[in-house]
Length: 272
Image (cartoon, rainbow, N blue to C red; front, side, top):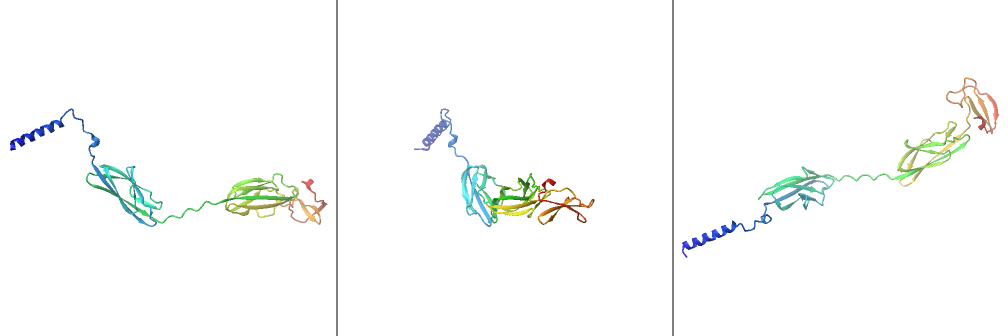
């Protein structure tokens, strides 16, 4: 076949194909079938220091695609669209810190390998926090003897902060008290009564246990200013101070010689 025939056939084929491409009745091209420009992203981790996390980390791109990476390793993300991508390194141990932005933005280009590196430094694991102290309770008991007891009772105060009323012979309990040493004080004691024990007292509360504090109190009759009691055998006498010889601020004290006026039975309640 000569060149003229081959030329004619080629021209006809070209016209046929060209006409088909311009054929208005042909369906439009499907954009989903057109391949997009794609790229590859490499993420590298470099970890230094002590107590490096042996489990490594997790790399996530655009919040969707994730891969595990060693503490010192590299992973590849394939078939990524060209453009900017957000890269996050997570599951970093508490004793480690990531240098630089995290997450960070990495730009990928067509035909080029995009890359980013996360530098991580680790220190010694911090010691675990101490466990919270346990709690226990404190039981306070009062026992009052004598005459002219205070009808209002007393007040018990724990550590100078928490208080409860208590009877002249009674018991109260403080609960949920942290284990350890605590101060217990008895107040509101009448002037004619004396606490016959250390006041305040220090008690030690065991974890889950109880500590006890006891306050024995002794009370005497109440006398007018300038009058005091004098004991003689099994009887009590009244001693009256000379005029102007009373102790200031002490209704039971005298200054100077004693003048015993008379003796009375022990029951002196009517002399209040």
